Length: 214
Image 1 (tube, helix red, strand yellow):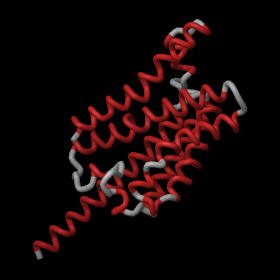
Image 2 (cartoon, rainbow, N blue to C red; image 1 turned 30 degrees about the horizontal axis):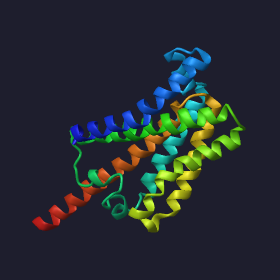
Image 3 (spheres, rainbow, N blue to C red; image 1 turned 30 degrees about the vertical axis):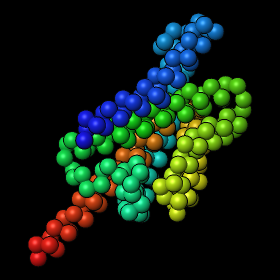
Image 4 (cartoon, rainbow, N blue to C red; image 1 turned 60 degrees about the vertical axis):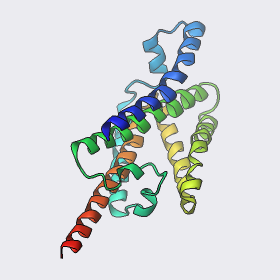
């Protein structure tokens, strides 16, 4: 599983990080004579103010607590086409956990935050008000997530949550000058959801095996 996940992660990194970064770098190199390190900092690859990192840590803790107390519908989360579908019933081996970490922290967490918050929100916020920039980047982030309606149409309220979450992540990135906080939250939320699916499907399998033995 981890080999396939690594390949998927590489594709995402190329498509969402490398490809958009190249014209971004060329533009700032020619227009502002910035080197690569300066361009990456401008794109949010820096620590930023530490208080915003603590914002993110608190948000991740709250998300994990919410998922623990109110776990999402397992049938919906493991439906064909859902992000966690491939993890359903996969077990809790090192291979599977490594794949979950790659998916949550790198394939989606880092790649999407770099593009949507690092490049898009950062660029917009330098050209217009924070409010307008944040609203626009959130609409852009929401657009590809509309595909959820084809997989789980009854879960349309998730789109409201995604849009609201994007507003918070955008605010965090713009205020801190960094994608570290938004990356922690995005990756942490995806990891919590994936581990929830792993644990609950393992538990379900164990119950079925026990009942069959009896």
